[in-house]
Image (tube, rainbow, N blue to C red; front, side, top):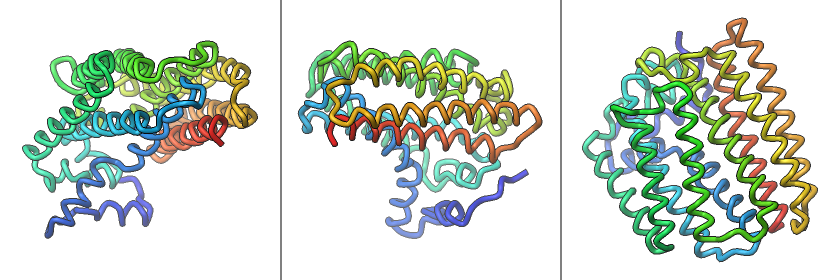
Length: 318
C-alpha cells in the first residue's frame, strides 16, 4: 500500500527527478542533504548546546565553525545512509523516500562516494583548526557513524545496539563541544546533556526506526522497531521523553543566569505534552494504526525538539 502524499510532498519529490541541467542536479543534492535536518539537528541543536555550556557567553566565530563541522559530518552520514538504503528506499510507501535521488539513480553512486570523502575531510580539517582534542573526538564520531552504517557491523540493523551507539555518538560530540567551549556552570550543563541524550540519542533513534519499520523490514534491516513492533517501540520512546522531564526540570531550575528562564518551563510543558501524545499513540499502534501515524510521531518529535532548542537559545540570548 502506498502512503497518500500531500501536494507539497509531490512538488518537492519532483526536485531534480529528471536531471536535464546542472540546476536539476543542484536540486537533487538539496533534496538528498535534507535542509530541514541540517537546520534542526545540525544548526539549532549545537547552538543550544553551546549556549548552555557557555552560559550564553561564547565566541560566535567558533560556534559557526562547530555548526559547519556538524553539517558536514552529518551531511556525509546522510549520503552514506542513502547509499546503503537504496533497496529499502525504493520499497518505501512514502513518495519522498522512494524518489530519493540516490535510490532513483539521479545521483551516481561514484559521485556520492567522492562527496562523502570530501565532506568528511573538510569537517576534520575544521575540527583540527579548533584543537587536537576536538579533532580526535570528531574522528571517533566518524568511526561510530561508519559502524552504524556499514557492514559487517552496521549497528542500525541491530536491535538496541543502534540506540547504544547513538548514546556513544552523543557522548563524543558533547566531549568535542566541551573541549572547544568549556563548561561555565556544570550544575546546569550536566542535566541538559542528559536531557539531550535521552531525547535525541534514545527516543530520537526509536521514532526514526518506527517511521521506517515497513521499508526496513522489506529491506532486511532488523531495527529495534522491526524486532519489537510499533507499539513497544513507541512506548519506549514515550518513556524516554517522560524520563527526560527529570533532567529538564533540574536544568530549568538551575538555569538562574538565563534572562528569560520562564521559557524553559514552557518548553518543559511542551515536552510533557509530547511524551503523553507518544504514549497515547503507542496504544493506537496496538490496534494497527499505519504509516501516517508513525510518520507523525517522527515529525512531531522534530518539531518539538526545534521548539525546545529555540526556547533554550532565546532564554539565554533573547
